[in-house]
Image (cartoon, rainbow, N blue to C red):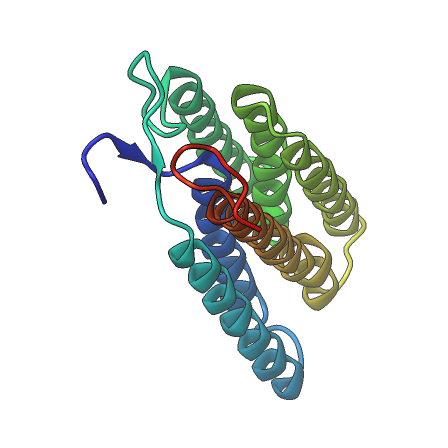
Length: 200
């Protein structure tokens, strides 16, 4: 990476989302049938590789004036800190007084969803708001299933596997969008000479 270059928030979010999506799928798909478990894990790995390839092909952007750190500003870390406290605080209650470990993954998905809504405000990226809302809805539905005594496979599917694929899908979309935008910019630049004269 060139000095002063930075990774765009879209790329950062895509990588983080894809990695978490893969973890969600791998950790919580073992309650499915063996065939489904293998299938969803293979698809998740392929999606992660596609995201990383798309991100890798887009060069870093020049750092903006004012010392921004590629999206890792104060707002980002405040959101992450609140997320960590909410996740572990909630898990302590779920696994302690409530004695409902089956609801743990649903709680994590709910908090992660709210976290993406907050990041949408911090990074001013509207598609994060849509992702966060969808994850939150799935997390709440899984919490309801856990409270109703549903089987673990149903809770894990709604509260982890589907959220995992949502993360992977949005990450693939975001990284692909960044790649398409960069190619369009590159092609437009190539069509102009150094003096700004159109060469096409």
